Length: 400
Image (cartoon, rainbow, N blue to C red; front, side, top):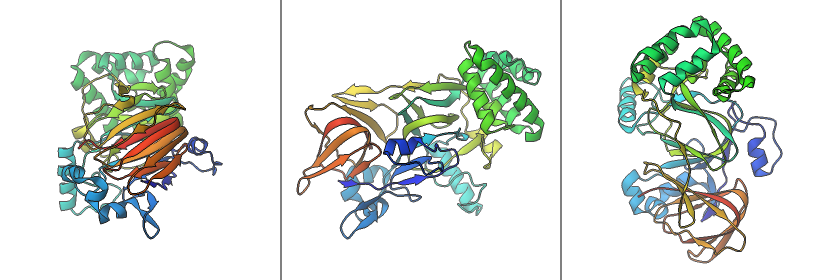
């Protein structure tokens, strides 16, 4: 096993204080949005192996089966199939969806055939893979996830008492569910941004006035007002009103499958995803929004937000998802407890988020690593570890 040195990405929506507070270091004064743990080529973790510091991507490329195990290589190829992150949202991220594997493969092939450069700002598909995600809250965490039932969205919009929203309310109350959601989102995203800017401003003003008054939509109105504060006049504010607002408590999670519109709004969490960069944006961003392709990928089935809580499996709290590329679990350790064995046929990254924990490996010679909040270790497939201490550890691995 090896301690990982990880890169922090300074995206504009990042919190200035959340990651430094977790790591116990002074803030830089700049946003610190994500810490990446893994072998993604954009910012691979580094470790000391052999002749000195090397990227985890290079270590895996040199010996895929030794690092990942034969089962994982057979299932996913000679690369780590997931990316693990700590995500610190100080402002809303873009409203977005991800394609399924078939859509991603077709979209990637089409854009390659048309000669669109991978770094072109209007490129949708950076690779041929899907991008399911799992976000687990470390602090109270606000987000948007999946379409509300149309009658609920109609009630929320009607409560704002903005004349410009009444045609949307009528559609949501009159049409079949999926047709209603498609028609309203198409109308919002298809309108000229300038034409909707005043409607967005009226909506934001009404939401800000209504949120302190309480009622069933108070939290959703507060969220809309906050989103509009960061993205004034953005049509994505109206699209956000169609989605479930959810506030996760620490330990609760959201699973974002293909076609599910979502946005992270604020809070600190760990995120585990398939190793892909495919994102189709709906709004709340200055980046490219491809409306026709987005509408082709979005799944308009209404649903609850689907808050996920871990299931205890012999003391390991597992977040169950229908994905093989990753598996997230959590250990909450008490001092004096019997050390836990962590044998696995697949690679794993272990991330401490609270307290202090000790990893012991008996591969070759016995080694110890102590992890504190925000620090992590990579263990190759087949390495037998034990875990002890007083703290919380998240474990990312694969199902193979």
